[in-house]
Length: 355
Image (cartoon, rainbow, N blue to C red; front, top):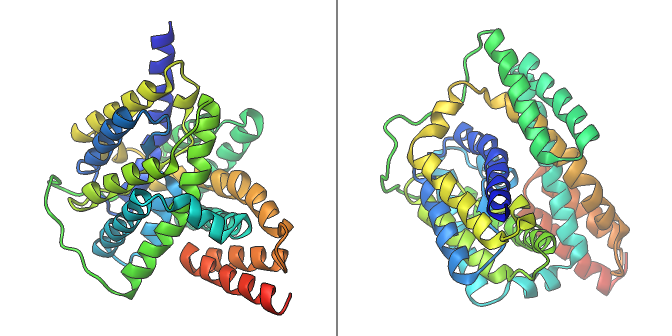
């Protein structure tokens, strides 16, 4: 019976991850090479006994997708960001960086990313009004009644995709033909560096928040430095062949009787799905706008309220509400890296001259 619960938990996380994998496809990331990221995650978690698995994460995919002007830039910033995060994790610096930045700025960055997600969902809906806004309405109603993101993403994607099929609309998700394990050429420019730093800032907060939450569900401690090394190596291996970013998530496998092995099973099964080339086939029948509802709920309802409240509360630092508010605003308008810098500058000014 416990094994069945482990399997069901793994399947529920896969169900949650597939539509976000379609979001990665819509930004030009290849699916088959991304299987390598899940293999790294499965092996890494099995070796260190971590209960916090990695999977497709809408926040990081959205940041990379919107900041990169083309596929090469998105892959380059994913690889560079992975290199930086690997070093941070290897030297055990993650907790120290979070302590230095402080909860106000971290919460402000997360709230800003939530606003970015909501904006992306609205932009999607504007491209395909019927499918996009039906996904948003169904997703909102489903979450209000269930308070469950797995149900939210499943129902909103299924209903909006069914509407799209009835209207005989074709999916606009980019499917890379003849994709495989082909070494990519990276480039370095200001956009790539800024994007990589934005992903680093986002993942610092996400690894702490999502990793710790999954650990609380599993009633065990999570070493976030281990999580950072595993997810970053996964990003590097994936992106070097054209695959997308795979990061820490809040995982239902934490509630399984054997949370480590349930998470490993989830990542192994996801790797099989990707290697079999099933994700692009699913994408041929599911419009990218079908994920608009999930993105809106994740951003506007799940991410923004709690993090914005923490950011605007200001903690005990001088001018805390201003620091949190500016961090959130700059992040939403630009990216998490510039948001963090703006917050740190104001935090420094607050301690020197007062705000």
